[in-house]
Length: 317
Image 1: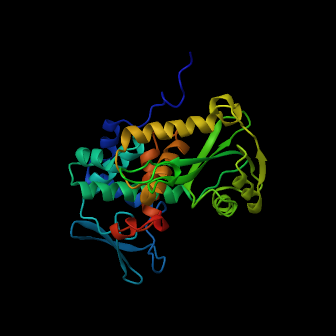
Image 2: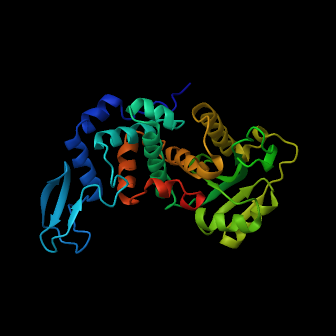
Image 3: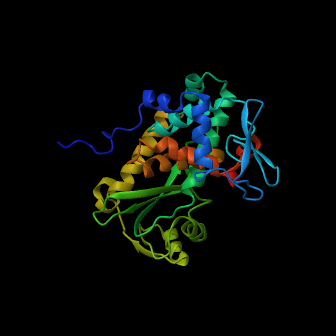
């Protein structure tokens, strides 16, 4: 039996990671390179000439033209943090390399920080994952399905009416051989034509060929410039429909990973971040060795995401 290409790829080992990012100086250098790949440019006037200062232990750049000062972490996900960059980098490594995700409780234990701090780190990093993948759309052959995240709470409603159940659209694009390329898992207000039209405009490239299981709301993708084909599954089980085999496999991995990793979180409020983090890892499954550094670049480009912003409902996710 041939070795699985994904499972047996080298990846980035913890010793190798610590050799590259084990000191604060190494992390500062990496962050500077991720933020300004072509060298420092003043965010105010664009001047390249600058002085380097040290303020409160943080590297600060002063433009020689306009005299504006910019700290290394200002305008990034790390803005206003009092934690060492080595701790942030380690968190990025642990979260990006965890195949089924990493709970805030597990992160707390591995980093040696308080639970509120671990929760904030986790959600900032997952938000970076979500915003990075939101820049891309699925195209070509796409399979879609309706799904729910979460379950009923004690004393609450059961079934689809549960307050903690989040409806979301699961989609995967396929190559010419029928193998998965990229996936998107995005919550929707409900399974209506209007909701699916809005979803398709954000998640799909115009002209995509979308195949669904025949749920009426998926015809809404045509209003977003996509082609729709309904395949009536009837009484067949998901594993009996080869056209949806990969999508069902991905959904199965998602639910298995979530049930084994996360035991208590607000699905309705934060579900989109957890789904986006899963999709982010899946979409980069062939590049495990560069996953942490790519996530670092994402963290430098999305801007500050303070705790109050992160704790807002789905409008911020």
